Image (cartoon, rainbow, N blue to C red; front, side):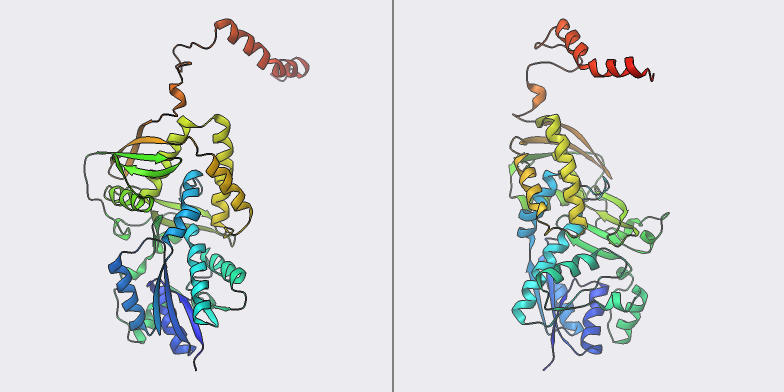
Length: 396
């Protein structure tokens, strides 16, 4: 009887190669599993399943982890306004743990001796998958053909051609990872510092001209409505993505440090994450105190870094989540956004918790809470440490 291997399968080039290699070269019974984080339509899931069987998979399953991914991760990334290097909404980085956990569970269910993935040896995903498999399935061996054989995309394509596999190889020149929290796009252009992705590399294309106003509503930090209509959180993300993508909003190239110590670049489109995070951040500026914002920014950055570094299961993450969730008690209201081709502007907010509407004072105008003499006394006291230092040291 053949030994079983569960392959984390996406339908892309690397994992398509793995199906053939694992069955043809290693003689294993291949069980393919697509852990969907909300990036696939029913038609796309069906196409991936048909492709897996055509490549020789013994069995294929689609594992929906979208709900878990939102409740246990996305909502906290919004609370923390998480943008890696102030650019990237940690799209692929954050979903890998939930995909890996689903793969581990399925591998145990079918009694697999091996787990395989198609990550290369130069990126972050190899660590994310390996770490999760090692922690939660230490008795199951890991196979990584693309990494172990140091394969290029061209080599994989030639191997598949030689084994009678027909596909749109031109389209496979780009590595695309699609989830509900954004789509990453890698290609030959992102391997160099001076080139960027061509227009046709992005899955979504510009469809609109002029401008459009979008209204997003939040309740305690979570998206709850679009243009005056209440909607479920996951469906809201999908609709905002569709709206924003039609304006080609949310595109950029992320440059950062990989877990393995080298610099890397990846293109992405993430209309919904960028619109939601920036709108949420503006609402917080109006509803949180200075020190709430300060400490949230510190912990939000840490949370995003730990997600990126494959440390979701580190216990301190649960502590940070408690802080972030508690900080959202008053973050409710509406945010108004103007959409344009490739760009958006934050217009303003409405909230019952808007601290600008306190009635105490208007910035740069009038105040009702203090007198000129109060300010003179306050300034005299707050300046005392500086006056003492400069009297002693005379640095300036």
